[in-house]
Amino acid sequence: MRLKKIYLPIILGAIILNSSNLFAQQGTQIKDVDELKKEDKVLIESYPHVFKGAEINKVERLNSKHAKVYYSVEGNEFEAIVNADRKDLLLVATCKVIKNDELPDIVKDVFTKEIKGKIEKAYEVTTPYSSEIYRIDYVKKDGALKSIFYNELGAVQKAPY
Image 1 (cartoon, rainbow, N blue to C red):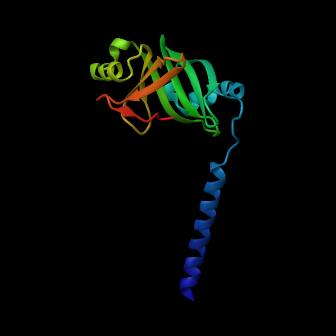
Image 2 (cartoon, helix red, strand yellow):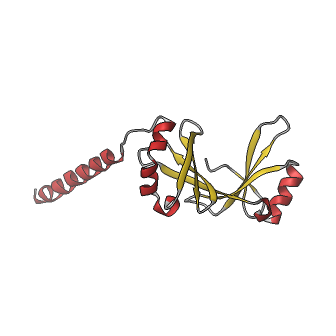
């Protein structure tokens, strides 16, 4: 009987804490790209290490879950991929535009041997959960722009978004 008095408040407390945590995670979804562009203050406050001093140039929706934010910092061009269906705009990846010469030689060699295409743009891609990878945008024979991702050793990587 005494154990019931001790465990009942502990169990009730755990249920209350768990349910309040669930409610805290729910938020309104950002549906429109124009609305997301207005939320640049949210981006800067959510990720000050990424967007501090940034000028947000453009925002476009990539798919049903992700949006691409084009921004610049001190003359450098960047892209950030955010999960646009969350109120807190979860950062998925950042991409810094680099010169083709800045790509590791092995990445350029693998690309030219396997793809045999012309590099339109090269990027250093950083994600919260992985080491640095490289993105190469190139034009396919049919004229479509395509992206391919490589790690620093020249191995093809799955797109992080």
